[in-house]
Length: 535
Image (cartoon, rainbow, N blue to C red):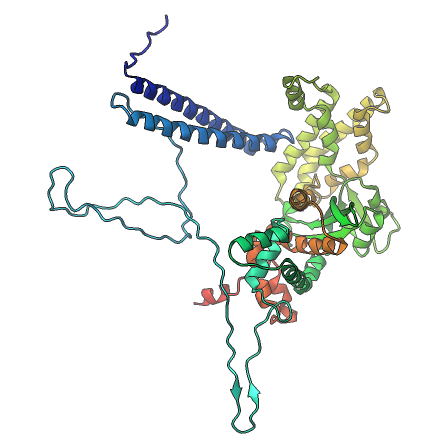
């Protein structure tokens, strides 16, 4: 039996307040449900790992949805409070907010003391004493402040010989330069780390009351890149001292006369952390005008070891058995191999197409089976990530090898049943033709199952293309590759790239050449760190 409706007030303002409170409750409930769903999705991803390549994007979408729901709930709550304020018959709706983490302890605190009352609000008495205080914290930001530092050099004259002498001028990265190290670091990091072109930076600085000429700023950027060349050479030497590298490339549109042409940005990543290697991670970027195989042959001309990369044909000459100075072994990327199978077995994408009124994409049971088997390998890898190479190899021999052998037998049995032009057949042929490269990880604990380390290194360029659209020239592409190498390496070592650049630019001129390694990101300590420790 339905419950009787609640008694509603006769007053119009009170009735509106009831409706506003109900709307606020509904909005709050929706935000609570969205928050719980987001927490469940994150926990599942943390415990079981990503079940599909779209999981991360779905979580991002849920976070955006939660933001909208939270904002709507706040608006409805304010509307309910305002409606309740116009009447005394309806209580205001109070939203149950989630607890907020305290602000970081290292942030400076500014106390604004609001004096207490001088007389009692109840009886009017004046004999009051302090019982305590309630502190409400508000996070605030101080706008960027510009300043001009005047280096005053006193001139002295000798009374005996009348010679005039003065201290040397302060160092700038350019002759007769004007930009301090922190400003130079900001220009470089904004351009190459945050992908903000110089013209946008100059416009913003002009609105802040500091007009700068674009050509002058560009000169400073070029000089800063030149000053950092010695560190770039050290990073390059460190990367190619590795026994195993990740390699990949991406497109870079480059401005030409009346048009743009597509250049390439190559990356080689040294990351020994998955097998508990002691060497710090680093990345080396190169730019080229095209994707010819001669470029990778030049990059790796003096290197030998294990190369984890995709099946780009330009690498083929590197894998020759009689190569000089030594053999390069190919290690296949299982993430690349899994991708075409996943596209044929994406149930969620098919459901979305159907919901949009489009013809749903067919789901291949064989592709679904291939994805299931490959996902078992990735699940094993997540459990042994961070162990030493010997332990990783032992676990793979025990757990992964039977799965790989069964996968090969299954694909060789099913492949003859498929037509030559089938997408599923192409996905199987991609793996079977390179089966030695794909199974090399079973016998070497240093090899990773995927080439994701290189793809993470290129992620910033892929995002930056939407901001700067194209590089200005081939020289600009080469300069960008050099700065990407330094900034990405700093990030891989959990170092703030802008703080590191500022300190290095201030010290590099007077730093002894034989101690240059001290300024590399994995060895770097701020200039005042040793002083503060000694104090």
